Image 1 (cartoon, rainbow, N blue to C red):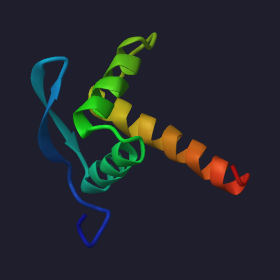
Image 2 (cartoon, rainbow, N blue to C red; image 1 turned 90 degrees about the vertical axis):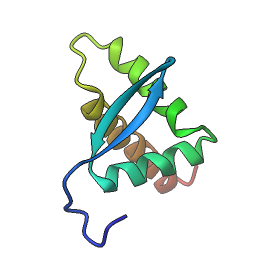
Image 3 (tube, rainbow, N blue to C red; image 1 turned 45 degrees about the vertical axis):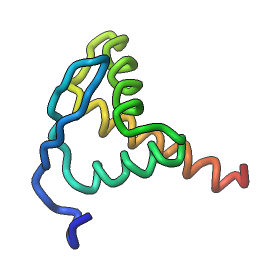
Length: 87
């Protein structure tokens, strides 16, 4: 990760359901996404595919980069809540 969390998005290519796509996220989100994938013992592409599938089922689906940011926010909120409750 960069020294500052304030950094423009960085584009990475990923493969979802057998096709390649590019996602632009700020480095802090890429790092958090890698950490979440590792904590769930998933390859990064598998986690992104899971988020994409959830996003597509939404009534008004956001773009994939936005869905990843939303997913990370919810995931980190749940993880913080678990730790604060001693779970």
